[in-house]
Image (cartoon, rainbow, N blue to C red; front, side):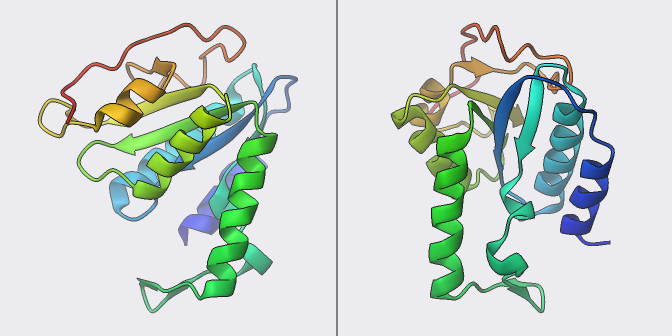
Length: 171
């Protein structure tokens, strides 16, 4: 089963709540990132303060997949449309939840965090991995309003986001 199919299956189990709209930023370029994305999406769908979760991978331009023979190879039309759609989704979200694999931080996710910060969207970060062994750049580390201690996305109160500082080394 492909990652996109697995995400659609997770979406079918969604509980419907009143709440915030979340843009879920995260890489999906290695098995750990795929697991973080699936687990976080599933957790957010259970959260009673979340009404909708936008997963960019589920909203690909013309429903196409730019992975051919295991290689990510988007053409310019797909790349431009995907960029525009993702920016629009961030603009329409209340909050950005960013997923970081400490060992292999996705530059697209870092950009999404920066854009959200620049447009005054709260950014909540879930980092998986040892941030003392694999430091995070100080810009995304300081740009988030809340760094989750662990995956508590199912119970996190997105109405009451208090400052929680990054714990780890920065570069």
